[in-house]
Length: 259
Image 1 (tube, rainbow, N blue to C red):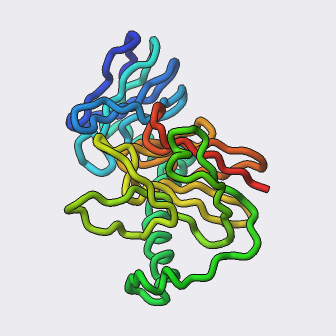
Image 2 (cartoon, one colour):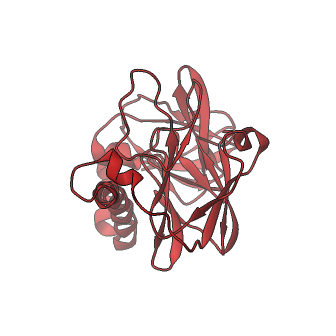
């Protein structure tokens, strides 16, 4: 286990590199970046106290994004063995890792169950989904937050108790997504929006935004969620919320008002 510093702009690891260590960020901030058709996309920023690159070690898979110092940072570098030993010695650290893995598994389960509920069976049926009645009473509203997105949908959409999926319209040659989006939006290459990008669902009396394993992640009130970050789920607060799909500077900026 060693400590080292990275200057602003230095790369900790690159997308596609082998996952040969885990970084624990002691000070500073690190940007998570992913290449999309040759274009770098900023997915979000990780702050002090968080692990970076742990999922690649756990899964024994190459890095799926690039980590770049947003400012001067100090990190602790752990080998895979040191990281796993630390998980074994620290119940709180292990609990946090298990929680993240559980959230991912729950996301996959929720997508399967949601599709079955909306089709009336375990097999997806497009016509049955179209026949689902719209909820009468709405407790939250989804709206476009910028003029660019308002060109695609002008009127705020009421959200009821049924899960609400936001995604991209498939291009020619692409098959249908796992879930049929309730809000289907157009995008152009390099795509910022995934075909199934995020879902808004009511759970335990509150509304949650859940990233659906999208390519570029989702940002909820400044918190990045998705495969590249510590969680896939964010609870919306009462009042206005901001949801950005596809990285920091994506044009897919939504407002969700929870009443």
